[in-house]
Length: 270
Image 1 (tube, rainbow, N blue to C red):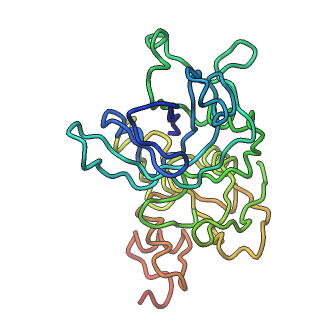
Image 2 (spheres, rainbow, N blue to C red):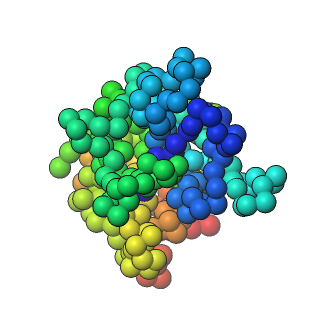
């Protein structure tokens, strides 16, 4: 799930916007590698920082993704650093309220102290809504949840994907709306082995699945139409890795099923 990370004007934490985030161990379960995050600032209390902010009021000011997380070696409390990747600042501040309603969904039990939490889980709908208020078109927001921490796989509404973007090399833009449509159509079980992450791991894994492009997105000559009903398939991490194990011999889902069932469905797997 996405999260909000608060960055204060004055703090004991040695944050560097868009580069690293310094946080206590209590938030380690939320800030895992690959988590999409919204940057947030609370109300300004020192006017000296007015030229460094988009607004003096509480607001959201950018999106990013959590990269590698490592220990703060100088901390005796188990504090951590997260590398920030893909930081995209907003052109203008997004306030925490619209029409008198908070954009974040505040649990009743946290109503009195919700904003004290420096890191807060939010659902994908809230994340998308805040991005839309920032003027970011959702089809142009990188779907960070599709990027695996160990290896980047290529992972009825029709949209475009595949536009090349520069990011420490070349990555390919993905549309989060297409991912959600694919899941709505095909479900969250692996289409090769029928594995269900939530059933295996419980609520912590709810909603998790890789989404495989039948045609690898890296083979797109330019951005092109992708139909989630026919071009995207949910696969578990293991099956997705095997499909992409040999780049010159990408397996189809039917071939993958054949391997699982012990059938030789094509001539040479070596």
